[in-house]
Amino acid sequence: MKKHNFSAGPSILPREVIEETAKAILDFNGSGLSVLEVSHRGKDFQAVMDEAVALFKEILNIPEGYSVLFLGGGASMQFCMVPYNFLEKKAAYLNTGVWAKKAMKEAKGFGEVVEVASSADANYTFIPKDFTIPADADYFHVTTNNTIYGTELKGDLDSPVPMVADMSSDIFSRPVDVSKYICIYGGAQKNLAPSGVTFVIVKDDAVGKVSRYIPSMLNYKTHIDGGSMFNTPPVLPIYSAMQTLRWIKAQGGVKEMDRRATEKADMLYAEIDRNKMFVGTAAKEDRSRMNICFVMAPEYKDLEADFLKFATDKGMSGIKGHRSVGGFRASCYNAMPKESVQALIDCMQEFEKLH
Ligand code: PLP
Image 1 (spheres, rainbow, N blue to C red):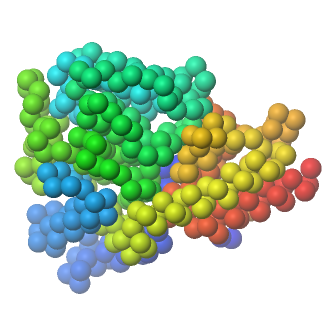
Image 2: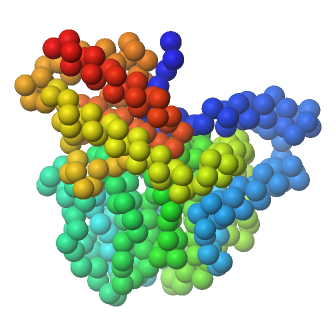
């Protein structure tokens, strides 16, 4: 049976990326060695790193003066690297979910943290719009897509101070004005690569300004200077990331990813709104196109487990909602074909007919 992978992450990758990665595991560039067993300092892997960085910059239209890094440690490591490197006195954070809260918690170890607004009281079902960013903050931190709650900032905000963004779950789903940010980071395991690599876009001249000592591995300067090779980088995930970047470019870049994301999300939200058995959980204007969260309507609450089984039996994988929201979460990342979204819609309609 065909499987439709709606997992929130690690998640679906383009089929071509999996196939090219599988080939390179068996024979990397005709070398007779596996990509799993080559030196990261060899010229063949250096070419992979260089192409991945170049494509990253090209596809996101990253201005001069920024570096792209591939590191370990996940987005969670960035929650501490960001304040370590950029917080001298004060930083502002928008609290839109658990990940934003975790980022804020780490920053508190380095200086004053101003929570400009929070939707915690509403279980993060919306993104606050009405807030003031202190003009004397070192940076303003946002989470552009809230993977757990299914809310998304659809564009780049305006801020009186440079921004930092966690784009773990929406990178490459829309064009970004990188010049508004000193740092954009994320775990790559949703729209870019298998788990094990973290991407960081960092503005070179924003680094090296804080007065504290920064341990080498946590200092962006180390990794900028070392071309992400200060220590052994995650070779295989970087190889797959390069393949995904080739795929995104061939499909038409972030403009096309943006168009597809809207098309797929519109299809699924239209069904959620039409079908009497389901209700969306996020405020309509903040609905995420990457993570689509919905629950059973109150009168059908008892049928939640039944629908999960019904959909799972028809090949839907990974649609169980996060425990803090409940119900269902259909993640529709870049690699998710429209046909899979249609298959889920068909399931919802068939289930409705049965009840
Ligand atoms: N930030 C966001 C928005 C996420 O969705 C996640 C993981 O799902 C994280 C951070 C944590 O990423 P990692 O597991 O790579 O540390």
